[in-house]
Amino acid sequence: MIFPATTALYGALLALVYLGLSGWVMASRVSGNVLFGDGGDAALLKRARSHANFSEYVPLTLILVGLLEAGGAGHGLVQGLLVALLVGRILHPIGMFAAPNSPRQFACRGGGILLTLAALGIAAIALLLRVA
Image (cartoon, rainbow, N blue to C red):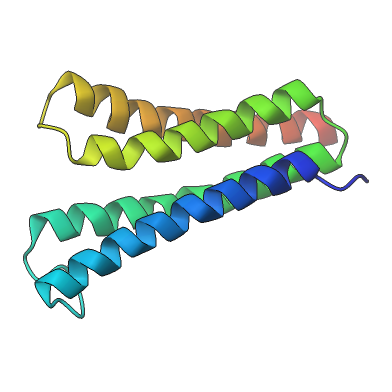
């Protein structure tokens, strides 16, 4: 088994995105004096959901891609999955603040989650094929 250096690099980049999302939520909480929940603030709810959505999808996807890389999967596959995950996780919160049913909402929020789900699904299938 090899050290998954590419996954480690993207994991570090994604951790920085996560820290940014965390700060974004905290800033909204402080400015709105909301210690718990969303306080009825729609913007805070969107920020918190963007942060939570990130934490729901990124860890499992990173684990699967890291296992692929450590198991000797091709660099192109690993790199492609990680680029899709990173771009998807950056696009998603941008789309959360786009006008409803706008092209930006569709492209960013929809595209972000599609890229994330594609990375997760392809990594899972690739792992299943490797162990079958």
